[in-house]
Length: 243
Image (tube, rainbow, N blue to C red; front, side):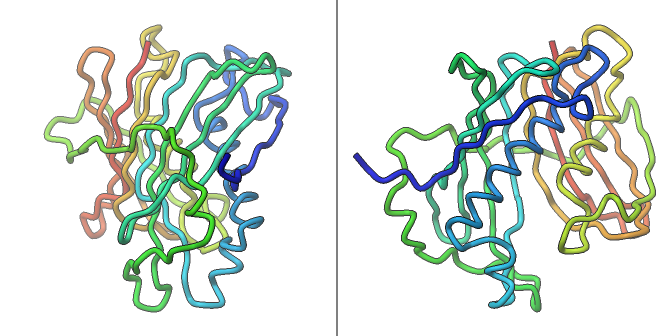
């Protein structure tokens, strides 16, 4: 059996992580997954603090989330995450969330890149030793092709504040995902439960940016974009499926 080089973490759903139905918010679910992946990166000596010595940093490029069922306040969940391989300039990581009975309730696949902090260019992924222990069975890659919107049905605006920033001084991925999802009309029953979310991050956003989050609705599929009017840059694109 190949050595497991991932990380498994146990969490209890807290009040700050639930929605009005007392279920785990999608953004909170992704946050728990990323907490586990950060611990894994620290254990593998490839965290942001390890890599900054070489002027490198990980950037999230794509994520695809599947939610089978959402845990409620007080429930225990287990998050399993592991490196899922690499090719050229792309690195992959999988996430599996299970309930206290061991039943899978959500999965996510993600695509990452390494950028040089000085040139802002992506660099080849090194052949880290842990890639010799990638599991044989992996989640499907996040491959959905997302495009800018031609029609906008709903929009909201946001000014980026200090609380939106991560340790790199850029807007946190979770803040961007929240902004993407907040453009959906959550007041109607069809938009109460998120089942799938594909996100592609296109550009960085910084403190004091003014952003517009827009969506186009097609039945229970919603297509999203976050853009910066100041320079026309698309910050992120997404596709969400609701039930």
